Length: 72
Image 1 (cartoon, rainbow, N blue to C red):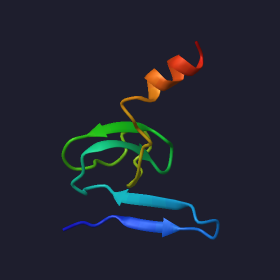
Image 2 (tube, rainbow, N blue to C red; image 1 turned 90 degrees about the vertical axis):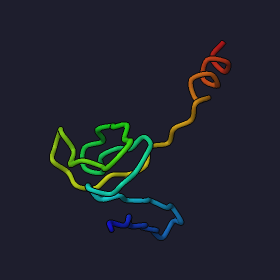
Image 3 (tube, one colour; image 1 turned 180 degrees about the vertical axis):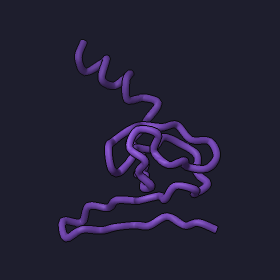
């Protein structure tokens, strides 16, 4: 079983790292290069840089809607 790692820095920012091979579902960004991937099974190594660490991406189904309303 693969587990993800949590890192908390001195400024109370919380970063959740998931290693390649972890079973996950959602949108992730490579911690090395920022490549985005939508995952429904196991996290792969990054296809762009070969990185092995992933961060959950800030995603919301309403993000585009809110941005559209604010810019109108």
